[in-house]
Length: 102
Image (cartoon, rainbow, N blue to C red; front, side, top):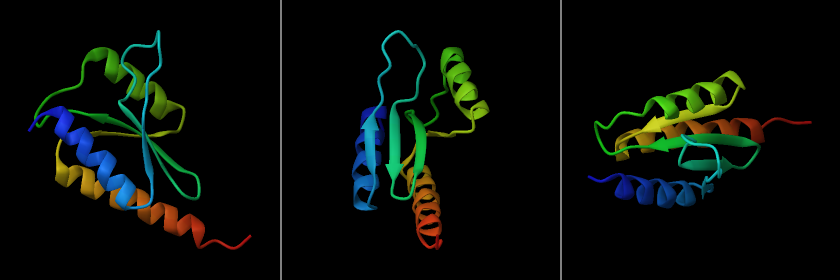
């Protein structure tokens, strides 16, 4: 399976679960993750997509680690199963945050 197919699956699955997967481009900043995924109630995650078994490049690792140090959720996903699992975590967090009373 190619990375493009993995990315298309992510976009479709996130939409079906009530979120949005924005294509993330940052001119002048190499190595940023492919997608910015948002769900209701302030759940946001950066997603780096890879073909199965493909590894991230050093510049990508640098940016991923920087985002994590800033406290952001970042995932590297290379299969439909991993997408399913991670999106489930994000939707559960969105539901948990929505259940809070102010």
